[in-house]
Image 1 (cartoon, rainbow, N blue to C red):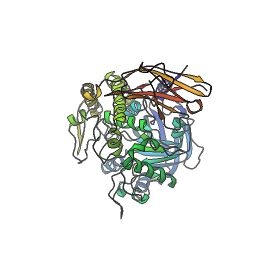
Image 2: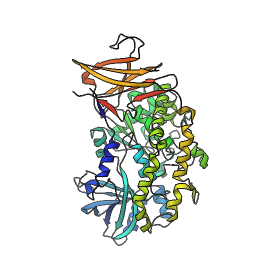
Image 3: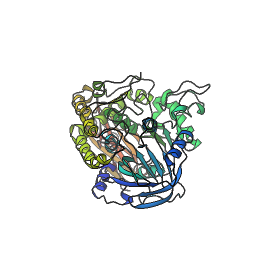
Image 4: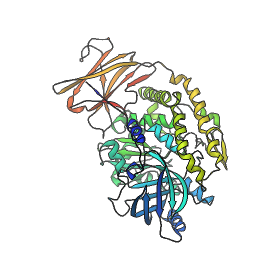
Length: 531
């Protein structure tokens, strides 16, 4: 018998229904309360000076989160455009980063979270772009929890903020079961540094394009916690660009396909997919394999609309943003190298269709948008420091709004029209193989997996791993009557592996024009083997 492993998204939904106002539920439903105490007369000036001159430095203060008080916390401003452009408008509503374990490493919320990140809804008068996008993404790959907080600084009400979970050692432990490995932030903290270094070819942010073997030429584009991370990062970049046929040895390809599909379908172009090529992390496991993680979604749903020529995309270009956009763009090798491989492209489109069916065509996306809006609306009305007029909280769902040089398409308008357009797209309506059943059986030290599949003219694959900290490997499933299957050409495919090598597995079938996976959300969902 097999066990089906449910997605973490389902578990999160259960947690959301049992929310109560305690620190351990900080990322549960409801608007949380964060109070910061900074015992300085000119605390805003001090924080501003730190942001300009030493952006990682913090002011020492106190914080109270949902009634739980913490001392010796570190407070700083965060963000790039959300900070500098907001400050330029002389608004006090700047984004904050509060490190609860700044001085006391064991001082965390009961959930184990040691950092509170507070974003100011920059270029999102609806307040929902980030929490809604994260909710979609958590259905298919590891991604931060996200919700709302009301913020008070020295008892002054600073309004409602978006709170999102940090991608740190705790996050890695939760999703991958280990604190080992290396985290690389693919987003330069200081944009002033993003320029060609002396003697280096011109780079383009965290695009994973190959420059040369000199680590110093990549330093402006990637942030590592430990210098040892440069070795697997450079190895990934070289293989991706020079010998992409070996990419599965250094990259969790399936998780990458999910990331690219999610960025595309949600028109999240302030990401790897877009003109700035940033806002993601890479976690390298102990085998040197990179697992990509999406981060910073406040400009999802068309919030960032500058193309590769830095011209503003029109509303209809966002609505009809092509599923295979940038497939020939050598400046985005994760897209151009992976999606030009026929099987990867078919799996990518299968993932894309799954997102389309489950979130867009089902109506779930707009249902959840309404839930998020109702949750935050009372506090938006009380927020006198909000960056945009109150009427834009409603108008931002359906109208294109203008703020200086920026035009923000309505979230509902974009995604409703995009859903209709995508549903008819020929790439998303190609015939796919059918995986009817999958089962496994133990035979001594061996494990036999069989699958009933139709229309897999290009073959079928068994993906497997022995621990959740690793990416899946693959072996062919056979329908030749000689590998444990019932007979040649009868649609029953089989493969045998050492039992010790398999804890989780899933199946991929490839046809002439499309591919299928079982479970549909693989590799985030998978089958488990009891030992």
